[in-house]
Length: 213
Ligand code: AMP
Image (cartoon, rainbow, N blue to C red; front, side, top):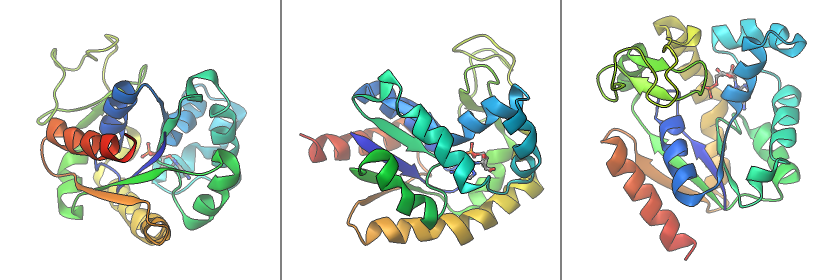
């Protein structure tokens, strides 16, 4: 099963991808996480892309595609994977067939822009295992501490209001056309991302189980 999760920043892609990955036993690949691993480790590549990432712009297609191509060769991708944050523009979508050999379904999670700013301001993430939380809607059991690995939670540098606005602009100009690209191929299933996390994941899982039975 090879899936793409698409939706604006803060739509809940990462949260849903983790649930789906566990349910179907397939890998969750977040290109944002792959890139953050480079910036956190201050690798040569990380230093090159840190300013773009902090401003909410897109890292060049060559860099992201190369990281993705390397990642999907790993053993945990044999049964399939969920791409979270890729493709981010039509040119990445066009190149994706060569990297993956084809995608089975595109899950679109829709949330209105005005809801996003509030969501992002309360978002916290684990720098160690990348688990996401929200101080109001999905708080950790113990304040400021990751339930999964016990690390101290942080607010991502690109989750401040101005950068979120930039990221939404980038989404509408670059990533929204990707939805149309996959709609024309009949691959898109759309879900309302404004309800409860569990309800949304149940709907997605039901749809996928019907499709792949
Ligand atoms: P995310 O965690 O998906 O919100 O991604 C965080 C940041 O990583 C984005 O704002 C971009 O700067 C960069 N990024 C992630 N995925 C891609 C991609 N497919 N193409 C270009 N830049 C990306």
